[in-house]
Image 1 (spheres, rainbow, N blue to C red):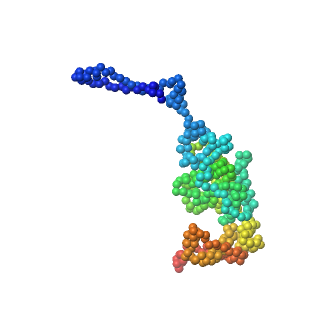
Image 2: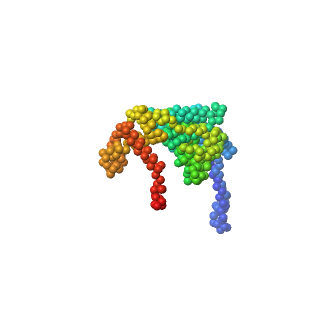
Image 3: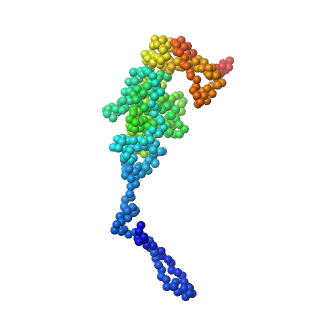
Length: 431
């Protein structure tokens, strides 16, 4: 700033002088009030006319053409202010979306919406890398689940009413969840899975919000990762069923209402923020499993909202599934048929328990070899941190060992059905 353009103005009050002081100081009486002004610099010929100066009438200069601090959403509202009111964390809950964030993250530059923090979110999806081996999938089960998923992904192009929910129900231990997971792995589906234990909370409304949040998470998998996704709720009747005098809670009602609303409006899902016309999520198929759907709220399972599928494996399905299970143990299909015929009317998990029970004696032998029960803490925990745990050699599976395990399991089942512990405790009352 040029020094010539500065002028200072200070108004000094007139000096109060008495006659005596004026007489004694003649110079003071002759001094006039002086002023020094400080004014804005006048633009010179080579100056830019005050570049950078703030003019009250002019529009404020934007920070950057790609800055999200001043960006508007698709409705023309302030983007950051709305996010602060709606989201717990902008980076985690929102990510980068078209029409709402910097152009560098969307459109022609990357070709699609980019969610730069999706990998840092809590992992809520399943990928099933642990399912190694050759498993049998029942054709009827495969067809039902695959058709339901495909129909929902083609819903926009099909001129029919498509239920969002597929309800798979049947007896306990018949492999409903496992068969579904095998189908997910075969089709390349990365689902979001919930259990009945998440359908209740000490906070009212929390389970309903969790379902909507998981639904939107599955939608983000479709949008951001380009993978098919499904929301699956296991044992839904255990969390929402009405058994006898079971008390109905507010959360039960909210969860039922949330599921019915998802079935009616699968692309408009709110987790608490203000409704926006542009907030449209992908339609996500919903699969639930249970044992007795008659315990559920009737409007939830009506036609149009839920398609029901009763799963009762045939004898052929059971033989095929168990054969694949015992194939790596060297058990022939003929031996599997004999085991299935020996223990009829058993669920699929019974035949898995046979194989698990045959390990008991070998595990006890291994415990003795590593130093006994007293040294298990050192062997299983402390030694695991320093060096390898002693190798356990699985037992050789035989038909005789499997039969023996089967008789033991059947005996326990009969004891549970026949022995009433309450009657045993009160046996003196009958005397």
